[in-house]
Length: 340
Image (cartoon, rainbow, N blue to C red; front, side):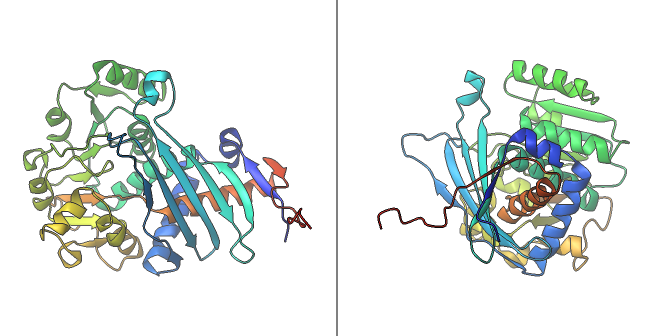
C-alpha cells in the first residue's frame, strides 16, 4: 500500500480513455448490475444551496459512494455549477473526484471530474436507448443546446448510426446555432427548430437537458412509442409523467430525496415505488423487461448516481497507473503530527 496520490488532469483522463464511449458503457453496465445486486453504498447527495443564489444551476453537490465488485473503490464527486459562467467563457459546471482505497481510506487519486461526469451522463442515455427505445427509432429531439446534450447526441450517433433526424431547440437562438455548428464538426447533422414542441412531439427519443426550474412539457409532446429522457429532471409536467406506460428510474430512493418532478409527485401521492416499472439496473440484469412493444411510452428518469462516477473514475485510475499517466504527489505524510 502506497501513501502517494495520483493527480489526473482532464488531458490525462482523455489519454486513459475517458472519451471512449464503449469503455465507459461497459463500466456503467457493470455498475448498474452491482446496483441491482446491492453491492454498493451511497448516501443521499449533499446539496450546498445558498438562499442568495436562487437559480437552479447555482449549487454544489457532493456525491459519495463505495462501489463493490471488480471496482471496490470509495470516493466522492464534488460538482459545482454557476449559471453565469457561460457568459464569461467558463463551463457552467465543474467537478473534482477523489478516490480512497476501501481499506486504509487514503486518497489514492484526485482527478478532474467534469469530463467524467459529462461522459457518464451522456453514455447512460445511450445505454437507456439500447434497452428502452424502439430499435427503429429515427428522430431524436433535444431541448437544451449545452454540453450534456451535445455529448448525448454524439453518443447516440455512434451507437445508432441509422438515426437520421436530430433536432434541437434552445431558448437562445445563438446558442442553438453554435450547437449546430459544433455537432456538424463532429459529423452529426442537427436541425434547429423553433419550439420545444417541434423538438419533442415528433421524437422517437426525446431529451431535455436544460437548467429549467419550472415544468413546461405537457403530455401532448409525449409521442406514442417514444422514449423520453428526463436528463435535467424538471422539464415535464405531472401529466406528461402520468401519460407514460412505464416509468423507469436509476435509483428510486435518490429520486425521492430531491426536489425534482418525480419527488414532487411522490410527495403529492401521485407516484410511489410500486407504481413505477422499476430501476434501470433491473432492466440491465434482465429481472424486469425494458421495452415490450413498439407503442409504449417510456419515461426514463436518470437522477445520476455516485456509483457511476466512482466506477468510471476507478477504471481510469487503474489504466493511468498501468501506462503510467498523471503526476504522483505525496499528499499524506507518514508522520503527520508535526507538533510532536
